Length: 227
Image 1 (cartoon, rainbow, N blue to C red):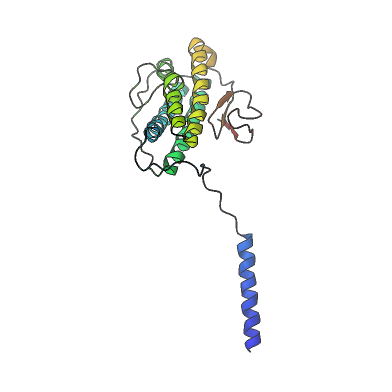
Image 2: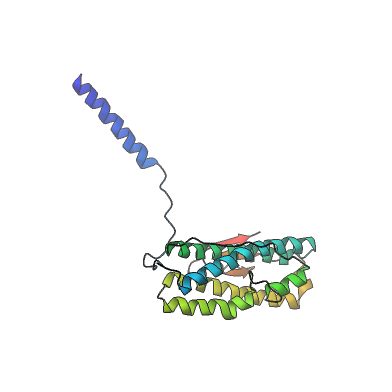
């Protein structure tokens, strides 16, 4: 009787081990550098990260609203571009959030209702004209905000912050160039003739031809098409 019970217990244990080995593994945690400094108080870089997180959160909402307006007005390619940019801003938002959390803080934003006008006016706003304090244009982020944030993060030896700011800066530079091209050729962007691709780690944005590798991450495996 004793030996029979032992055998039955052994079989049950082996079955449990087999089931455990077949269960799906959990996805890895967010890849944030373990050397990211934990802020015992709010450092300038943490303040900058919070400001960037708030800005990208609002930009994501704004560009989705702009996309709907462009679609209503018949600017199909502009609508698609705004959707791609919204996706890029979402990626930047999430990247900033990971670093904020790694520093021991909670990401905070204040979402405001976008002021949506005509597509031409919306493009002007996206490029930096007449913006609220919550949302800065791509040109401001490219020329002033992110370069200053990167400089401060380097001074604090916060490589994770430098990286997320670098990713955003590269994408905002592309967006500003695209907006300038569209603004000068608005009617050429009415047809749904272009495809848009976004690097899901850096937010870099490309038209028609997806990159073989994303310049910031050096990989082509993290590219998605935005419909």
